Amino acid sequence: MKQPVVVIGMGEMGSVFARGFLRSGHPVYPVTRDVNIDELANQIMDPLLVLVAVGEAALQDVLKTIPAAWTDRLVLLQNELLPRDWADYPESTVISVWFEKKKGQDSKVILSSPAYGKMADALKQAMASIEIPVRVLENDEQLLFELVVKNLYILTSNIAGLKTGGTVGELWSDHKGTATAIVQDVISLQQALTGETFDQQALIDAMVVAFNGDPDHQCMGRSAPARLERALKLGNDLGIDLPALENLQ
Image (cartoon, rainbow, N blue to C red; front, top):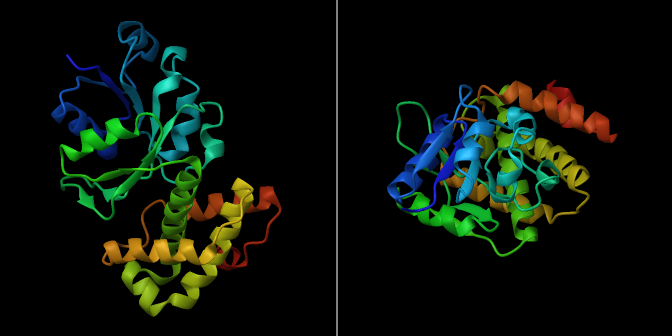
């Protein structure tokens, strides 16, 4: 029997990954609110990996509950991830998810999802079994760039959508001025959060590739107001001005 996989959080995204591992022959053990995680860790002492599939707002609280025996095999997939989020778990594998899964619908691939870490190959193989492409990155620098691209895509489209509504294709074709102003603020925030300086045009070009991957994707998800509030709080904490975001608030 292949090594088991533990999935913490069995929402839409966790369920997709669970199906990929099941299809690949791995037994999958879900961790829900009713499961005692320490008791499960005593039974499953050597899982292949532990996928943390909770939302970004719950991530840090969940990480504090991870049994010590599992901390070297974590896989994280949340939106708005940056290296500081897993600083206490340096062996984590991270995947930037570029497929969408909504209740009652099949998964919709936008782009191949980049992953980095020792479990990246396992992710690629499992997701290939359900026709979701994953590409394995070569180093931390590539991962950071990919995470910032995803953050730029999410924050720009969600926050701009509070003003423009519509789709990401319409945002870039009809409201580029609004989008560009928000892009500059988001890049400033990402640079402050990481302490790095990025090639801004490369980030924008990669974001536009994602826009073109699904131009009919709606800009404003239900979490958009919370993303704006969180970004402004981070900017305030870091002492940086985010004029476009402040105007939207």
